[in-house]
Length: 115
Ligand code: FES
Image (cartoon, rainbow, N blue to C red; front, side, top):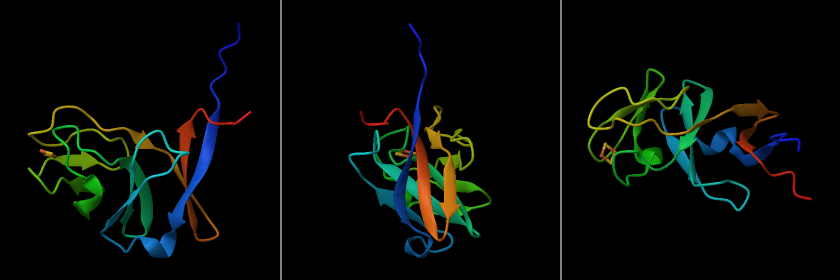
């Protein structure tokens, strides 16, 4: 009867794997989908990698001002919330909480807790 939703922290990369202003696409069995990890001036963020407008990889986009610009049609997404900030994208992409610990980047995803 209880509907406790568990969360799991998944190691995705080291901080040195994502240069400032860039993104890194990460695929893992522990992630619900490919995730793009971004480094904006030393702050790390994670979004669904696939643009909500079509199929571009947001990890290939340009990062600045806490936004990533899709490399295909240049829609911009907020790195904190995943909200679409410019056309042609209308829908958000999923934003994942990020934790950086001892130079390692972790993304928090729902579920997991393998039993
Ligand atoms: S695929 Fe990203 S804006 Fe079109």
